[in-house]
Image 1 (cartoon, rainbow, N blue to C red):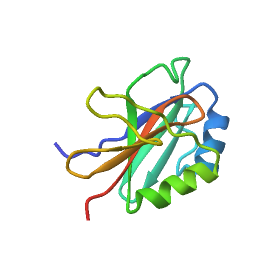
Image 2: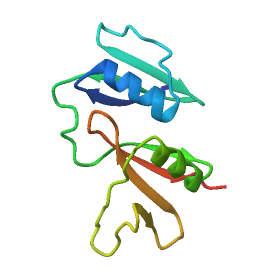
Image 3: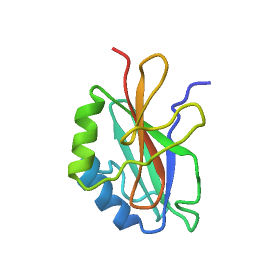
Length: 126
């Protein structure tokens, strides 16, 4: 089987989500009329879809994760766009100023999009 997996994120308000993803992540949809209520974004070989749903923001787990070359630079950009990082407590590990450092040194942070979806962000291995 040959396929690509695509993350799907629900949105109460598709236009609000579109504006947020453009303003905060610099992402513009590549396809804007999918089934009358969805946007598809493709970027660097990956992609995600935002679709209208009354269930947006109800998932309490990470809905999607972004891999970046510099977590510090990405977090500075997010914070300058007014995005607040989530404080996460996983028992033995928790965030410090919004960033969790794992035993292997990997760092990750979480934030919510305009629709309440939880997004993770971490540095790609070099």
